[in-house]
Amino acid sequence: MSQPARVVIVTGGSRGLGAGIVRSYLESGDLVATCARSITPEVELWQKEFPEQFLWQAADLAKADDADSFVKAVIDRWGQVDVLINNAGVARDGIHSMFSDEDIDTVVDLNIKGTLYMSRAVGRRMLARRSGWIVNISSIVGLSGYRGLATYSASKAALDGITRALARELGSRGIVVNSIAPGYLKTEMSHGLDEAQLGQIVRRTPAGRLGDPEDIARVCQFLTDPANTYLTGQVIVVDGGLTS
Ligand code: NAP
Image 1 (spheres, rainbow, N blue to C red):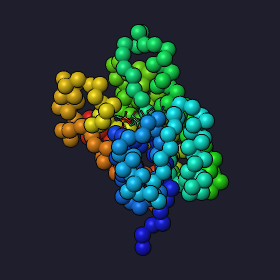
Image 2: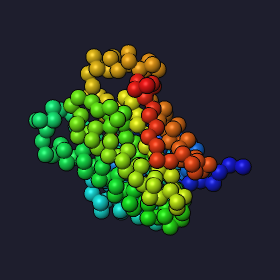
Image 3: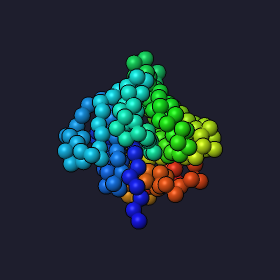
Image 4: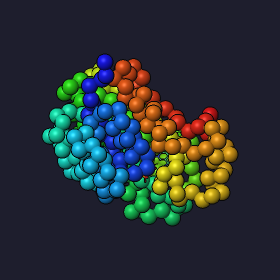
């Protein structure tokens, strides 16, 4: 017998990795909500193709009010949230000694605060139902660091800290919390890397390629499977073996 549809929130699902994760849950028959600051052709397509199964709302998750109103829109429509994928993220690179206040704020406000706002708003609903699955999309640079990415690396290490703390705080209420730390993916975010850097990454990756959104979406599905009630508080590295 097939599983009943679950309500899944994927933040930053308008493109890149988030869009791959949205597609994966839509294909599983789940009810999927996503947000970002701007709508994209892919989102417009889902609105037409999945009118009953898909919800879009523009939101800037660096603002607590936007996060709360997005979660409220999902609850108003479907009454619950089963799965939260905290995917929206931003990177700024540059020598840290020259970094602007604005760049530090942009990264911290979305990557750390946005994740905390969403986890707080959704966590309240999950606590009431004593059930839920949260995945934070961190990064291998939160584990190993990367030259020019001090603020971004700090923000991703923070996500892994949030994962461990929330897994402890929410575990007794049936809520599972994990991080996925991707390696380098073929998305807009990695366009900042030049050919030489990308070539070096691919040469050093045992799998011999950059990651696809589908590589990560598959692990999201595994971690948020209704049967997963025991794998929690972990950081799952999905990087083609780069850091092995
Ligand atoms: P991306 O292509 O730049 O997409 C980022 C998504 O987040 C977009 O939908 C974007 O839409 C949304 N977003 C950005 N700022 C936002 C805000 N203030 N409020 C709400 N949504 C916002 O990035 P990606 O490569 O798919 O990355 C997705 C996640 O994976 C990020 O957390 C990233 O750190 C992580 N990651 C990526 C890689 C990689 O190699 N690409 C590796 C490891 C981890 P708008 O701009 O319209 O708001």
